[in-house]
Amino acid sequence: MQIRKVKKSFLHNTKTDTKPKVYFDTNALNFFCDKFKGRSKRSFRNYEILLSWPLVDEIECNSSFARSSDLAKFVWDVSNRKILLNIKDLTFLEVNALLKGNTLSISDYFDSDQSYLDALREAKNGRTPNQTRVFLRAAITKQKEKILLWERQHRREWFSKFKGSKMLPTEWQEFYPLLLQRKYFNQILYKMVVTYGLSSRFTSEEIMNLDYKNLTCLSVGIEFYAALQFLIDSQFKKLGKPDRGDLPDMQHVFYVGISDYFVTNDSRVYHILHDLIDTKNAKIIRTEEFYKKTNFS
Image (cartoon, rainbow, N blue to C red; front, side, top):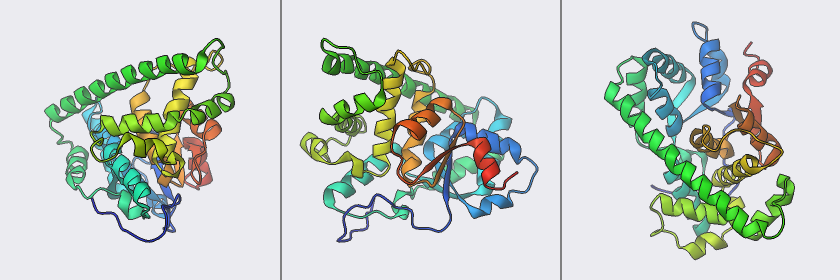
């Protein structure tokens, strides 16, 4: 992976193109696919619709062949047919750039691997092999189980580190400073480094001493993960069980940092991104609102 080296420091804002960049999570993608079936998609030319590996995987492994085809046709028509780096490569990209003082451009966030185009082409033509779909579903299920165990471990850590003789704070704005003070977000980042097999590239000391807020995409994903766990444990805001779509939710939100619009209908995702954490320049918006405000209707 080549990173363009310049003398300036790492930049928060990598969005330099004039077309607003839009990321649809899966439920938003389904919404717009249905809305524009058999209709002109000319309105989307005013936007750069972003694609990610998690999104393509979910399209491919949909339980319905016909639905996979519809979704693939839709993104084939409206997107730039480029795909963003997966979370592992995204982690390496941003951490490496921050530690070396490099600046990233938006082009650095796109993957050079063209195999996803073949996958989309096969899906839109209804030719995705069934064994591929079965394999993807199995792999995603295994990842979800791993995330579920990780979440349980982190919640146990919260009670051991922050509770003590008192109750955990019931409001995020009270709990957030404690997480900052204990460098909890850096701890999450280092666990990502280890999980993705990058510990030989970055030391624990390097990760724990960097300012994670300067990671354009990773900072949003990390804070979302922590806020999600907080809401699961909060006695006042029960927003679903720990394994309720956590993996796809967390994967999608990493791309908020390079988006102008992040479009979702998921109540948990919207609440966390809109009300609890700083998403910098990205507008977190519900599908219906985006549909109306952008003159699609």
